[in-house]
Image (cartoon, rainbow, N blue to C red):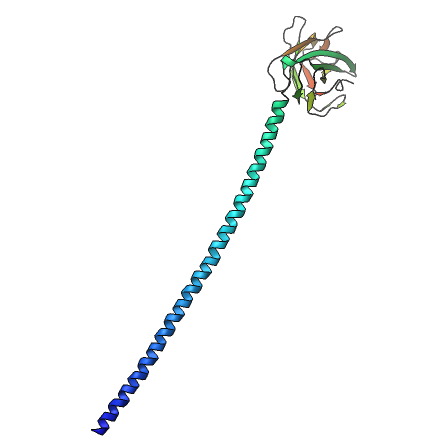
Length: 227
């Protein structure tokens, strides 16, 4: 009887120890799992939230600055163009400056003057067409160039105040050296850059001998296109 009671107490003691060890193991596992989940959540937050916020703020700021800069530049360009209109035929008067020749080449100079009461801007090459004695068109094949037989003549942007002028020159075949359809031009029709209306003038001193082709220079300030 006494041996049975002792055995029962020992069995209960062993169960108590086992239960305590099991509880400790469970508590440790729960603690580790909680720490792992917390660390993962923190790491995820660190890897996502700050990066997204920083990147978003930076990109938005840069985009807004770029758009503001482009808008300001565009507005300035529109204001400048509106303040100084382009030179059109209604504002200009065409005249003949003169002609000269050398070694089979002829040079003709022309001037466009701003006859309006306001400034205008122009740039580039006029369109040209030779005219006969009665004002009818002659065959005209023109080539735009900044370098002709008589030298270099670079492009330049111009603003013409009232009364100011710009000039251009034409290079033609001079004399009887060409077998092409040569004739005498007694006038010239011109279209200013960025315009569609025409201007006309006479070629004085007996007209200009030409053979259907011509080089055309860009507009230059004053009468500087014609030496």
